[in-house]
Image (cartoon, rainbow, N blue to C red; front, top):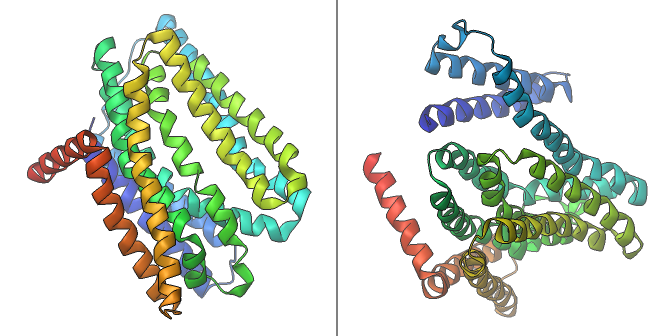
Length: 347
């Protein structure tokens, strides 16, 4: 539960990776090996800082108990397979895209995927990392309530980042990349669904883990993997942009199955859980429409500079989302602001 120290360790290690990898790539002939060395440095620093914060109490000798070993194995082995399936979902799709569309499209797809993944990884996964240890201290009914509340808060924060990224994608890519990389933009628009679909099921996944239902988590990740590659194969004749939709279908399908499962088996209230997702999503729809309107309006007024257009789109999108969220997702917004005030006061 010492999240501050964990955040410091991860943050310092990530910063060290970025600086070292870029510096080595720019000043040496290591090429791609600079990334390998950066990863080694990142892991080393993170490990040293965690040990520094926690001390060496974990080296204390503990009596061997087979019952404890069986408990760990029963919990951990399905999670291990789930991680393998999740890794395959995240990286093997590049092989499929390469087989169907060639290396150039793989480059576009991988760049778009990494950009689309930022809201989910940098925001959503950090929230999820706190949920599991927090849920373990709650009774069953309190865990159910925590699923609904955390889903709404995560949707409120992550959804606008994902939808906003997709909405400004054409302008953003014009600003960041040269003409050779403009093929990233349409893929980024489609793949931004990824950061909407993934967080919908994360709170439910944490809830299942807190109840040691790791075999269910494993089967759900296998389901996601099968749907992804089935979708890629089925949509490939339509071209790479349509094929990229298989990612959103796979993650979204898994999230919906997760939600349906806990509603059916555990009696989680269906409408409050759906409302926690739909209310922020409605505000995102209004935001996306406003961003598109701002883009066409700026063009009509003769604004041609990509950075100026991007600034206008972002400003309009932020204002629209904030205003709409207060109207359609007021209780979630107020809950979020209250938590933010408490955090700032503690800080």
